[in-house]
Image (cartoon, rainbow, N blue to C red):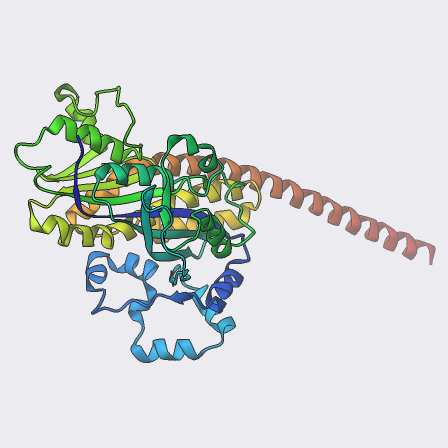
Amino acid sequence: MELMTKYQYTYFIYPYLIEEGKYKKYLQSLLRNKKCKIRFFNKQKDIHLYTYFLPNIREYMFWSFGLTEKGIKDFKKLDTTVQSTLLAEHECNIFNYDLPEYIQGKVNDSNGIFFEISEIKIVCFKSGVCFLVFKTNLENSNNFSDILNFNYKFREINSISYNLKEYENIKIQSNSFKDVKDISLLIKEIVGKENIAKKANIGTEKFFVYSYACIDQKDWNENTDTDGLDRLFEKYRAALPSNTQIINDEYWTKGQSNELEKKVLYKNKYIKYGFSIGSTVLLTSNINTANFTVVPQKFESEYLYTYLLTLYKKILFNKLNYEFSCNMKEAENEFLDFTKKLWIQDVTNEEFGRRMEQNWIENLELEKTFYKLKNEYDVTYKKYNVEELSKNNKVTRVIVAVILLINILTILFALLF
């Protein structure tokens, strides 16, 4: 069953960490990079974001909404050192990265899946948790199977396994790069050499996948074989290649509807949202006009930023878990600050946006991780206080001993003289 698409895009999200105390310097390096431009948000142009997010979250992620045009101009006049100092005080900063232009065009047009990278964002949080976000589009292909193969292949483009999977015969090529392996070099350029993601147990071998595809109504309408569509959608949701054989039927058999609802969120008959721990996908049919106009715009703006915020919480938990064993006091302050400013705050009042967020929370097991981290914090905190108390007692005993010794010497001195 081959589906034809009318419109599609995929965002690939790469998480990384900046070491404690080096965040301001990293922001300065981005500001000095001529390809990087700080993203300023405008209430009129970005009204959809302004009205979607609640005030506290809006201030947390999009502080520049509070700037006037004069304020932006004044900021741009400042030295990069001053700019980085000011930016480092905000919870989140977003940059756009301009792609380099290569003269070389496509190679071997008949061999491979061609794509373009139409946008790159750099999202940096004050805690040092950052995301590199690529927006990609397929070129000269309307086959849904190509989207499946491309998503599967590209998500591992920065991993060792990318070169080990050539036997799969899935080849991807781009206008933007002479060799797609150069994307790894671009990642290193933006991320920098020092990255503590591995120490914090954060997987960077595979990108997170955030993908949208609109199917031609001739392939998805009231007469469509829903079983076949669900099988393809399962591959899409799980970022599997098109030739994968689906053996387990639990996601589409009528007797397993409850299991299906855990993996798929339906908004209406011709929209399917799918979730996994490493991906979020949206499949629609152009039988409804809104499905290829309003829906994809909202998916890559309000919902994308909500997803990034949820991923941020997940990555930050890993970072804090690592820091509790390295720098208890610093981690404690960061954990308490996060709980107050973000964890207990509602993101939006939009009903469906809240449902989307809840699905991400469940798939990423955020609540489970939070309470596990909180318990570890409580244990570490008690141990830390016991150790500090023990140190203080030792110091106190030394001070008392010194005082006693001084008193004894004073008395002896008085008796002798």
